[in-house]
Image (tube, rainbow, N blue to C red; front, top):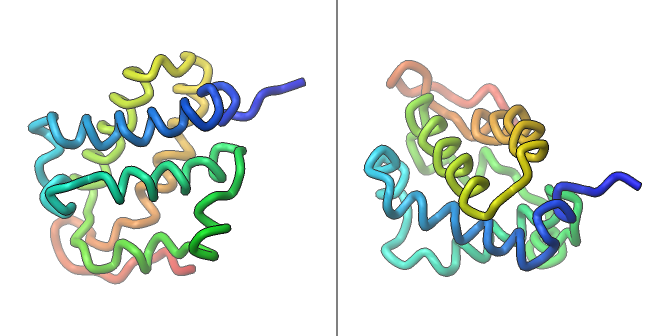
Length: 137
């Protein structure tokens, strides 16, 4: 039987560790400065929300949906100016987090395109100029 990414990461504990490692990377990587300043000083609440979202997205329990209902990523990120630079910073933090939690190489490679799609979906700026997102909910 094929394992879900959720299972490959070690279930709840592994996905929670991934969410924490993601925001820890954002906190420490200088190249993530632009996206770090979009967040509150204390990252505990957003770590929990990312864990809940990733749980369902990676094939585990749909915790975010159960707690908050559906999610529109573009609406949630609309208040923030997100262009290619910010998208790439997010991807860099996720790449670092996957390595940090010891995600299998197979999973890290398989996740690249889906994570890119998520990060690109919330992009609402093109070439450092305001533009409405082409991705609607």
